[in-house]
Image (tube, rainbow, N blue to C red):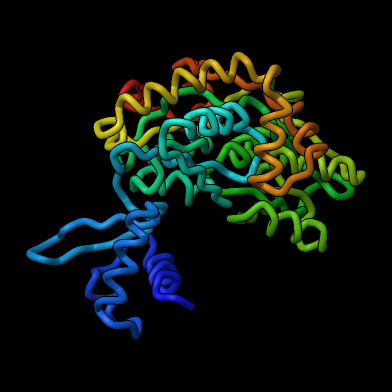
Length: 331
């Protein structure tokens, strides 16, 4: 490995804490080699360095730096097909700005990254963004994203005593709770939580859990395998799933860039049918889903940037939350 590769590996392990430049001298290279590698990585915009004391510097990977960087936009998304308009917007902006798309497996990890400032914009569950927004005061909900697009998949019968997989503090958990209440199964089944959808599906297919609350395109993929599926929109109507959140420090540093993103985001939402094939190509390359899986999954969603206070209140009420200062969370 080269000095650059070793530095990147070390910084990846340090995550958002970063590392003092002096720490890197312990990687086994000369000071001049480390200095040259840092300069090269900075010029390639792979790392960012800040002075933290007299001749002392802390260094982060650009994707891990817990603060906004002037002229840079980092968009965080989950491995789902709910964000075609956001991904098209990122692609459009790449023509004139430095834009990075970062894929997360966990809604909690992604929204935490938004709160910390590791990503500047994030498409993650509404409920998760509200909870982190209330706790950290560091993010705002800027727009709607996808509505619907999830359901419950069951092996065999829906009955008492089964074990159901879900993702914690998410739309999946909210809708599962409503579903169980409607069918009088609250406290009669066991719910276990997973960080990654692939782990949850593996557990389901191997018989470790009996059902799972999951989003597209996994929902349709399992339905096609012959498993019984309950789509939440067919039972409860349309509901907001993920929303577009923005870090407040990013708003201060890159307000013009954010406004440009938001206007393009609205335009791409309106023109989504026209650019559907382009969006399919982006998602297939980014997530590894087949175009057929993505096309199937898109049918489960309604895409809209508009999000009313009433819609947010209704979604939170389903989760059992009453937020009195909701206006402070909405942009």
